[in-house]
Length: 51
Image (cartoon, rainbow, N blue to C red):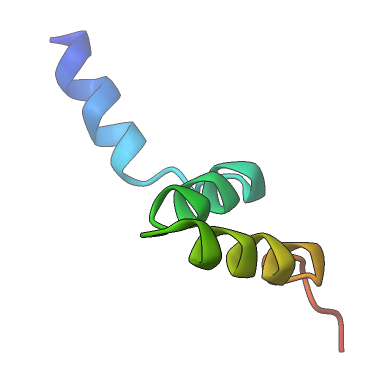
């Protein structure tokens, strides 16, 4: 019973910035793409933007 509640709650959980960055890097298809994605993250791709 608790397992189904955990699944339901985790479906609505917002991933952390580190988790989003890791998933983005994991989806790179080669070394060049990985390096490009790492530069994008270093330049603030997943940072909050304040207007």
